[in-house]
Length: 132
Image 1: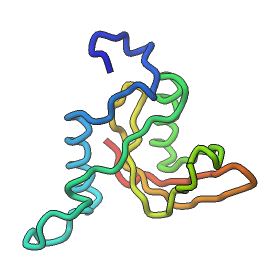
Image 2 (image 1 turned 135 degrees about the vertical axis):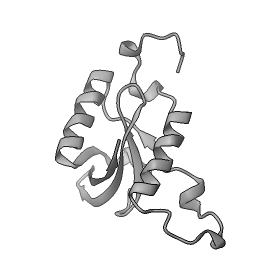
Image 3 (image 1 turned 90 degrees about the horizontal axis):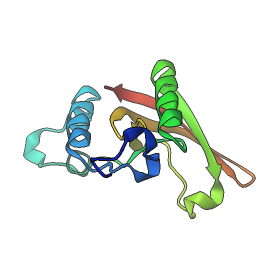
């Protein structure tokens, strides 16, 4: 993302999710969600070394921000997309990801709780594991 760009005009798909704020969020989320409970003599696990994917919902910053606020209040959410959008790699229950607002700021660690395929649509439900 261009640091000089007006944040209100940046589309969520243009947001760079690989930044320091994301790494700091991931460190806190792992700790608070007790995802780093293995003793250190086993060495770092993949979960500790590689943060889950980050994403924002919506076609605009305002839509992403509104969606995040609803998810944080309800502590759950869902998305629906065409099956073709998944290219044969459907989400699986238990998978973690980081939900970001429209400016790319990480707001919640979420876990897929249910995946339903109806015709050519996939509904992915998730629950908030940790929120900033």
